[in-house]
Length: 90
Image 1 (cartoon, helix red, strand yellow):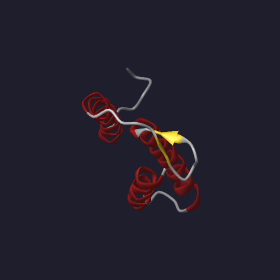
Image 2 (image 1 turned 90 degrees about the horizontal axis):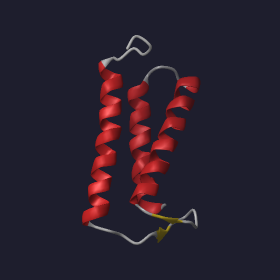
Image 3 (image 1 turned 60 degrees about the horizontal axis):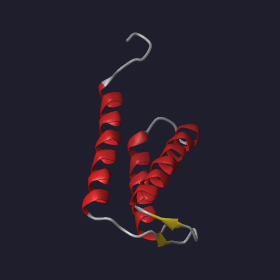
Image 4 (image 1 turned 90 degrees about the vertical axis):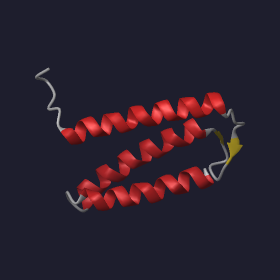
Protein backbone atom coordinates (compact mmCIF):
# COMPACT_ATOMS: atom_id res chain seq x y z
CA UNK A 1 0.00 0.00 0.00
CA UNK A 2 1.95 2.96 -1.27
CA UNK A 3 -0.84 5.48 -0.78
CA UNK A 4 -0.28 5.93 2.93
CA UNK A 5 2.87 6.33 4.96
CA UNK A 6 2.54 3.77 7.75
CA UNK A 7 4.83 4.87 10.52
CA UNK A 8 4.98 3.47 14.05
CA UNK A 9 3.10 6.46 15.54
CA UNK A 10 0.34 6.00 12.93
CA UNK A 11 0.10 2.27 13.64
CA UNK A 12 0.04 2.85 17.41
CA UNK A 13 -2.71 5.45 17.00
CA UNK A 14 -4.93 3.01 15.10
CA UNK A 15 -4.14 0.18 17.53
CA UNK A 16 -5.15 2.35 20.48
CA UNK A 17 -8.44 3.32 18.82
CA UNK A 18 -9.17 -0.34 17.95
CA UNK A 19 -8.31 -1.40 21.51
CA UNK A 20 -10.60 1.24 22.98
CA UNK A 21 -13.46 0.10 20.77
CA UNK A 22 -12.93 -3.54 21.78
CA UNK A 23 -12.67 -2.67 25.49
CA UNK A 24 -15.80 -0.54 25.43
CA UNK A 25 -17.70 -3.26 23.56
CA UNK A 26 -16.72 -5.85 26.17
CA UNK A 27 -17.67 -3.42 28.96
CA UNK A 28 -21.05 -2.78 27.36
CA UNK A 29 -21.72 -6.52 27.15
CA UNK A 30 -20.47 -7.44 30.64
CA UNK A 31 -21.68 -4.34 32.49
CA UNK A 32 -24.68 -2.80 30.72
CA UNK A 33 -25.46 0.70 31.86
CA UNK A 34 -28.36 3.07 31.71
CA UNK A 35 -27.75 6.40 30.04
CA UNK A 36 -27.07 9.30 32.39
CA UNK A 37 -27.75 13.01 32.12
CA UNK A 38 -24.69 15.26 32.32
CA UNK A 39 -23.93 18.95 31.95
CA UNK A 40 -24.85 18.86 28.25
CA UNK A 41 -28.41 17.93 29.27
CA UNK A 42 -28.41 14.92 26.95
CA UNK A 43 -28.40 11.26 27.91
CA UNK A 44 -25.00 9.65 27.28
CA UNK A 45 -23.51 6.20 27.69
CA UNK A 46 -19.84 5.21 27.97
CA UNK A 47 -19.66 4.86 24.18
CA UNK A 48 -21.15 8.31 23.66
CA UNK A 49 -18.62 9.83 26.06
CA UNK A 50 -15.79 7.99 24.27
CA UNK A 51 -16.96 9.44 20.94
CA UNK A 52 -17.21 12.96 22.42
CA UNK A 53 -13.72 12.53 23.90
CA UNK A 54 -12.17 11.36 20.61
CA UNK A 55 -13.85 14.11 18.61
CA UNK A 56 -12.86 16.81 21.11
CA UNK A 57 -9.30 15.48 21.27
CA UNK A 58 -9.02 15.74 17.50
CA UNK A 59 -10.09 19.39 17.65
CA UNK A 60 -7.70 20.07 20.55
CA UNK A 61 -4.79 18.63 18.55
CA UNK A 62 -5.69 20.58 15.40
CA UNK A 63 -5.99 23.82 17.39
CA UNK A 64 -2.71 23.02 19.17
CA UNK A 65 -0.91 22.59 15.85
CA UNK A 66 -2.31 25.87 14.57
CA UNK A 67 -1.73 27.95 17.69
CA UNK A 68 1.28 26.43 19.46
CA UNK A 69 3.15 24.33 16.94
CA UNK A 70 4.40 20.80 16.83
CA UNK A 71 5.09 20.27 20.53
CA UNK A 72 2.32 17.63 20.68
CA UNK A 73 3.13 15.82 23.95
CA UNK A 74 1.65 18.77 25.85
CA UNK A 75 -1.47 18.57 23.71
CA UNK A 76 -1.84 14.97 24.82
CA UNK A 77 -1.83 16.11 28.45
CA UNK A 78 -4.60 18.58 27.62
CA UNK A 79 -6.52 15.78 25.87
CA UNK A 80 -6.20 13.49 28.91
CA UNK A 81 -7.55 16.23 31.18
CA UNK A 82 -10.37 16.81 28.70
CA UNK A 83 -11.14 13.06 28.61
CA UNK A 84 -11.29 12.87 32.40
CA UNK A 85 -13.68 15.83 32.46
CA UNK A 86 -15.93 14.32 29.78
CA UNK A 87 -16.16 10.96 31.50
CA UNK A 88 -16.83 12.64 34.84
CA UNK A 89 -19.34 15.36 33.95
CA UNK A 90 -20.86 14.72 30.51
